[in-house]
Length: 468
Ligand code: ARG
Image (tube, rainbow, N blue to C red; front, side, top):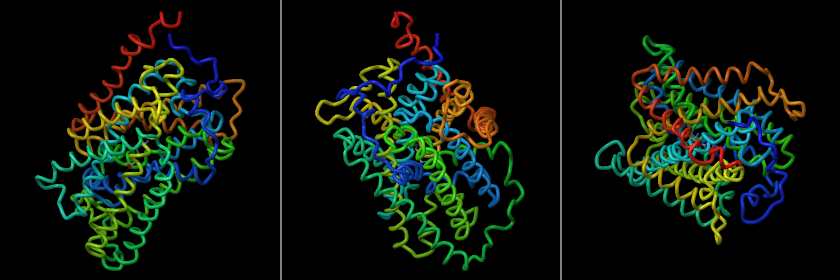
């Protein structure tokens, strides 16, 4: 039933406003460094400021904790190196969706759109806005872990989702500006925390938190896999650049370079940040510190430090929130254009020219999720739902390379080991999460929602009659 490829090339069709071609016809105006900024901007968000507690809880030792960040970074790099080949050769709007469609056919491509619509984007909006809300409460002198503020976290997060959605509903003209400003703020802010911690914290503690490197009970293969899921939330975003590859100048050269430069820059700052946290706080303290960056700053320079960090995190999360709503509609557009998705989802507002239906749907689900779940649950749910599609997109390189006309400007180094490692790591992550009783049901429920897209496909856009 699923055709292996679609004959027509959407990028080559003429443009007409204000259909999806408007988006595809956007001028290529992102240079190399803007593309790097898009990648860094969509990756650094909440995770590096929020995930260390959960990771320290699963792997309570300095070396295992740092190892999980290195592993998460290598996972992202293997993915980025492979997507660099695929995206370099097919720099089209739609990114992952295009690779999944061309590599594996219509059903998996539909499932990806379905999962983005019902789980992935909403969970991501939820996790990011939760972090935003927690840091906002902290800087205003409230402890987000205590009642009644623990409830307020959910309300504030919901309001943040609604506000960014309204902003995007009214047209995303200012989106790129917000993106650039917040990217600078987040990388700079993080770098500042790192320098401060290394200059002031390290002399005080003398590096005592780094020994013993692997205390008894701080490492187990299963726990490592679960912690890796949390780290992957922080590393996620490397694939987002592929969604806007159609807007990058000289894409065959710049897309692969930006993917590599951006991913390496993120890995570097994340490792430094974790070393910085550990040079101020012990593993046990990090384990109980939900807002680790604020706690580190509090110890080093007191309330002024907390205010600085909180503003950095709020800008950072706001930027990512905005980016999430900016890129998502492009996926739905690309799908609907190919007749693979519910047309109304790709409807464009006549006045604001924004994909308002997709925005409202994503926002409504995001609000529902954020009211019911915690940061860790949302971040893990996001990773569980998205990694199967990353694996499919990465593995598309295996089928695409068999094509006679395949001439990528960049070839994945270490092929086929690098993409194969990525796919194997995905299988380990999901298998491990299903085997572990603590994550089993949540994982199966999420994968179940993804799979529920199969009957939906056959009942709607996949109906054989539709093609006749
Ligand atoms: N890595 C980001 C964070 O730590 C989340 C990325 C969300 N996903 C995305 N594709 N933009 O908050």
